[in-house]
Image (cartoon, rainbow over all chains, first blue to last red; front, side, top):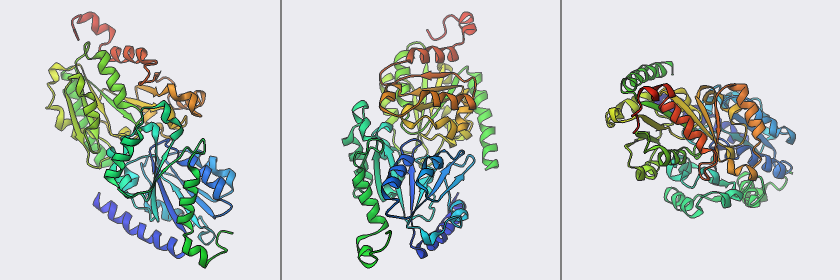
Length: 222
Length: 222
């Protein structure tokens, strides 16, 4: 296992170097199956594809269903089918990087395989990890799957519209999350209803195009 | 990987032999995080702990929260913390079997780590796998995670009470499921509201104590 992780780390460092040289940020999106990664990407493309040049890598065990849902945004998309593998690794990312014209991208979203565990352990060369967790999974996920909540640069809490119909306790969720990670931004959204998405759009825009860079490169993303 | 799976299979065969000699059935419950495995076990203990002698193995990365929720039923429970591991394996099961008085059990439920993928690949020596999937995860799970839906002896579709508030299509779910597994029983339930649970209680009772055995051993479970 240590060997596998070491080899993965070396390749991730290579990927990170390539992306950095091309000024592309890569966001590794991790969640349980069905927490709403693809719907978040749909909303994000609708709102931001005219402002930023977006590419997507879709990681799935099998099928290209998530990629099909994103086709309508006319962005470059590459599907990686892991054929049973429970996570993407840096080698699989490295192999498909050439499929993108990186000089023409601002951000590359990677939708990892639906799994809260192994994807947190494999660096893909991303700029940062983004955790997506949904209220319907229960309020105990940060306590039970701490690694992702420790490592992510932001946490999206999705499906807030369903809270009234479940026994999800916002207070319990936040207490557990803050025990694990005291400072990580928490963005509460409903990707189907639209609640809270402006805060997400602002946050991710600031990551892609930080304020200082905006001043220096006023034409970026135009 | 092949070596790991081979060694796992050998130990699983040993576990299966031991359980069979003690007439204990073992149910390997697999789902995404938060699909409702523990709530299903709570309802099952409430209804059936007076009829069958139930034991539980709780698999979790960390914490004993699920086990705490089951303590009130006064059944034997053993927690296996995988410390980052994304699934249980037959070696971890074998190590804790001695903690149970197997001669005094009818059924041993194993709540696997919350993960739709790797747990499907590791035989624990179970009598059968049980898949739990919730409507809030979306209707595309059988197509995207086919292995579990192929291997399970029954599928629990949980959180049916939330269908009106989501875009879950029962028809799409069933079409995809039947493409993968034409004959597996599908039990539609709401573990929090109670809908459909009688069908589950009947089904699992029939697995623990098949009709023919009932006639031969009228005192079983009394």
